[in-house]
Image 1 (cartoon, one colour):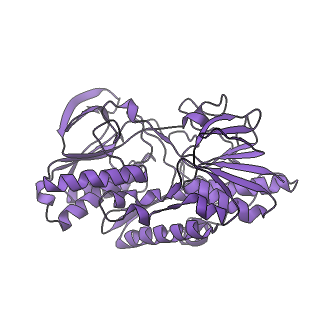
Image 2: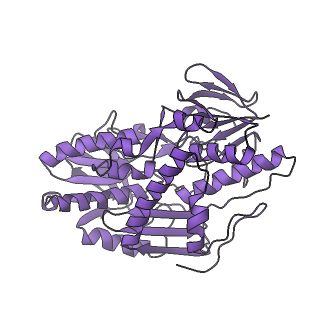
Image 3: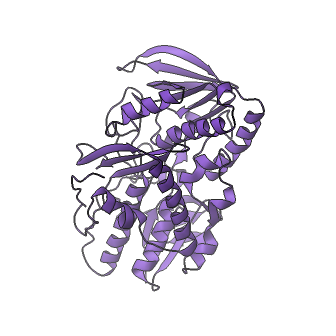
Length: 435
């Protein structure tokens, strides 16, 4: 019997635990260590922040659901990992020995890198966690009583730009429905070199489509922007040129602001010497395995992926749902192979597939693979994306409630995009078929 610990109870961690149980059977011990007792469906946070969802609709008791599959749970988080002795210390003082450790923690939100930012000790809101999104909804309710300027965006070092665009256009939709849009000037501030860059160097005609979308919705933008500080009611942003030299400082007034931060690795993981890069993200090989500690695998936002290209202001590469699912499946199949005495040579794909809701429509971004050159790259807009995002939410929550390990992207979306199923020992290839 092997003892497997999954660190993180989010999209990657919960999926990994269920896939491990189904793939390995009941003879192995699986324990999930989360931060708090709830699983939250992160992609729905922008809807929660405008009151289109309630927190109870997109969360569930992680321990209760995992127990139904005979999976242990500790909600006190991790404070330290002793990789050489294969031992993890939890927040409540327990020592968990492991044969394999799956790191699926997600990021540490680096609000401290921009003075005055963040919902806990600053003046801006966030949709990065369910708790933050709920706090944003409270702030938005107050804003609606006396509306004024809004600033939305992603600060320097951010690697997840989609939710910023989503939230700006969801807010626009909500304000139009409330007949308040005419009272709310909106500014989009981003570290991207151009609108639609997405941390991916652009996807198809994402630049033209996203610029057109913002223009049609009367949202002005500032690119190559570094947020210098946030003061009560003011965002101080410095616009830069293509060489990264400051052009001008702009002081943007706001009554409501949501700025996505840069990400870092969580402390317990970043503190393991030789495991991570300088930002605390886990270094893995093509099998999702640590080169230094072969008993450690990693999936999701915590994985070190280099920027797609150098930009004047720092941007990171996103980790989308498709990529996370592929990483998780890769890990589970490699552990299963190793336990059978076989060579664990399964490779996943680092493809970017993103469904971005925009209130009453949406855009789909596909980059196969994420890091250029690519076999497929395109962006599509339509109401079908809005509907697909809702369906994805409902289905994924169904999976989490029922302990289903079925990979939704692999089963339902790969065929639509013309991508072959993942195969052991090789990277999944992409055809040139486009939807």
